[in-house]
Image (cartoon, rainbow, N blue to C red; front, side):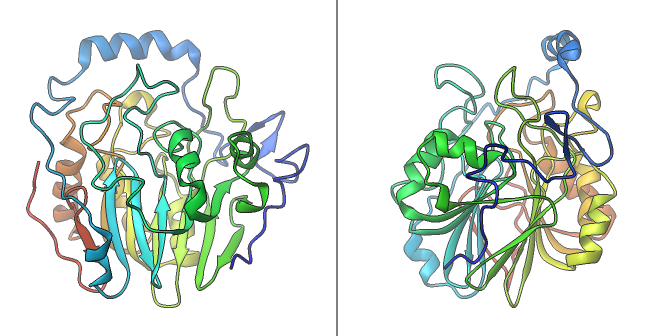
Length: 339
């Protein structure tokens, strides 16, 4: 039973009332914005001339097939990295999905654009009923129309940042199944409490809708545990504020891929991701936003290796499971590098 609500879903102005929204656009609290179209030629030139020869794996990435019945044999909170930033959670015996993307390409079309390095460890059809789906923002590697539409019948509630209710309603999702939240707003779903928290990023699915919807990180809480999901973000002082308000966190899912100095204000380097984890007062860190799509210039495995190296330097606990491997929050088991 969802006790949160969607205050903007049926409004003609779905973002009215937010301090982050002015002049028809959302804005980062810091004033930082993503590179505009004027930077596109420079980015394309660097992509052509500076791309790592290992930007894509030369061999198949190991994926552990996931059988939901195997989760039923385990106790407590569970987490499974499904790909890129997609995570399956079991919280108080209910299942949740974070930024689920099951399509072959992170793209507006399926005949072009970044293609998956690997298949998901489980099919959409094999997933159990889902209590809630949490979305961080509208970029194609985080919000996939085909996945959302296929999941609709088995999902009780979608939790999204401001402005996305209208988008998803246009895809056929019922208004009463969508809960929109501004930063620092919260919603409860049974014993699970969600808080949409700040991030430093941008939004847009085309040339004409830049920053028309909000982006967010998420605090996910039960009576016994606290989790954090960064979404996409640059490093900023908001992590400390979130940690002070809601930490410490038992597990953090931190963006550590698709970085470059050209867009350092809206994507973190792995070392910054470890610092964010520290700011959040996290216990265990899982690097996400890596290993599935070629979205930057660095080697595909570099975000994982740099995250591990920095965590060791700073005496932090990091988990780097294969896609499909199960994390038991009561007893996390660090794995040997698989990349």
